[in-house]
Image 1: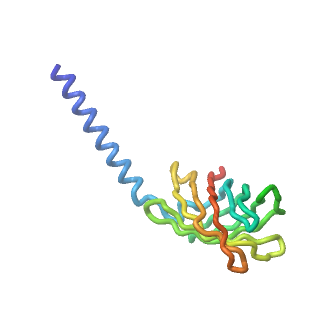
Image 2: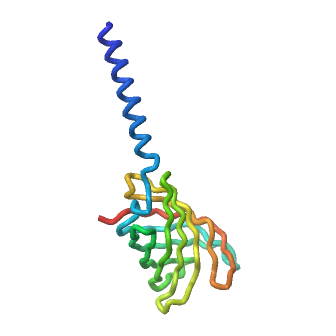
Length: 157
């Protein structure tokens, strides 16, 4: 009986210390370098246009560098209207708690600005995935758009 109780105490102490170490590793473990590399993403949601709510979806890929810059391309669909491939670039700021603030600019193939967006994200799964939600979407004329846009990223390779 004493052996069983001691075994349980030891097991519980081990698990608690392991959980504390894992928690300490999770805290303060992210930086801009966490995003460095190639990523693929999808965006789904709704955007409010002057004509009303429209479903939207995006698929694309982007590369991030250590200082927090990114660039890539995407194709989008808003209300069933498919875009030609768009150019995307911007910056990311990663906090040690693994939250991220993205500022993204989207251009047509001729280099004309189509929109600016601000995203808030959370890095997870050992920095191989992150999920984001748009907090701002602005057109070149300054007109803001509202809606609900969710983005899921997966690290390539």
